[in-house]
Length: 253
Image 1 (spheres, rainbow, N blue to C red):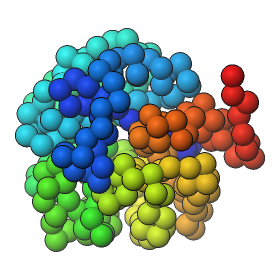
Image 2 (cartoon, helix red, strand yellow; image 1 turned 90 degrees about the horizontal axis):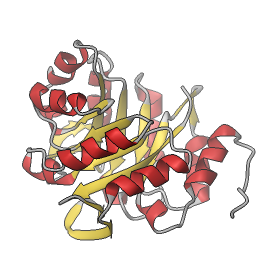
Image 3 (cartoon, rainbow, N blue to C red; image 1 turned 180 degrees about the vertical axis):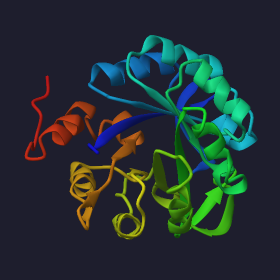
């Protein structure tokens, strides 16, 4: 599986935002036109867009469907969406408006059969595994369970999920680097493709993720948001690196 860069657009009240360590009280607004932002990511070479309805993650009810539908209609690349998807009906609504892959989070813990029910209808499903110190957090990261991240990923191997998206909450939005130790353990213990999320802040961080290998297995990709909005990283450069790992620096206009 090739390494894919997923630029992230997190939505609150129809705006592009980022949270710091998952804290809704530490919100930064990066724009009020998510569709234009998605089109910019596509023009920079993105192969996928990662959307999160943070309102839905907190409440369990989709709130940004109009924006999500608009992005799906305007883009020619696939879109995956997470946040508050806790039933087959909610997932179906998203597929019906053009979403390519849903990201199930809390419900994968509270209703383990949900992923299988969605996948058996031919839909593409990812599972968002959000962790604090190695344990799964749910309900918009407000509740920490006694389930280990690695154990949930192992459970997903037969669930119908295509991929697990692993976020270390304490690093999310910090740009202080990814949890390489945790990701190394995960790659050594599970047999489902893994996308890393949280903490990416420098080219070195990115090279660390691209080059991470355990027993011949590497990551399937990375999700990045704040580092792109803060212009610490250039999406075109990241994509160039994935296409040519020897690539060091992209000429900027």
